Image (cartoon, rainbow, N blue to C red; front, side, top):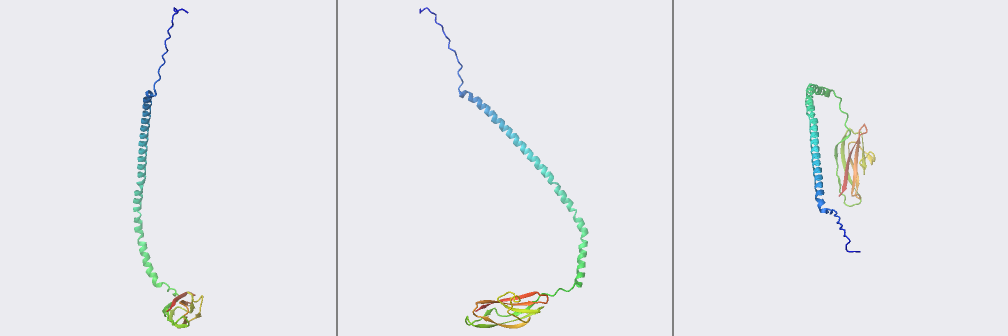
Amino acid sequence: MSDETPTERFEQATTPVPQSPSAAAPAERQNRGMLIALIAIVAAVLVALIVVIVLLVGNANSNTAQPSPETTESESASPEPTESESPEPSEEPSEEPSESPSAPPAPPQSPSFATFVGPSVASCPDTSGAVAITWSWSSTNAVNAWFGIGTNNAKAEPFESVPTTATYTFNYQCSEASQRYTVTLEDSAGRLTHSTVIIVRQ
């Protein structure tokens, strides 16, 4: 090879230098900012529409509620017929007094004790033996009477049959700290009245 061989010059190809990501970021940020702004505007418009719809519905409800006073006004006219009816009740009380004198007599009352006298304490010297207790009673509308021990219904659990008006003596057993005694009256219809006394040993 000789030195006279011409040398070829190759130009170096220039390739475009890629842009750094930092250069593209501002454009993306701009696009995102625009999107956020659009979304905010759309949201604001939706909220405004919802508020308008709510106001319209509220006004519609208030308008529908207005007829209720009208119904009260129509009801206010109702007292007028009641005034015309008022004379009729006034006549009814006038008829009631006229019926009361001619009403039949009341049914006889159930038997009752007109009087009932007797002690509720037994004075025992000790806890053995017995002491006499005397009761007296009178009754009205009674045809039968019973004396019972340890019961509230002497007819159901009688100790013995007694007069409907009487002075009655019985023995309280001092071994008991207390005892329940009952006199039961019965009228002709089978209705009962009871008088119960609990006697306590003292």
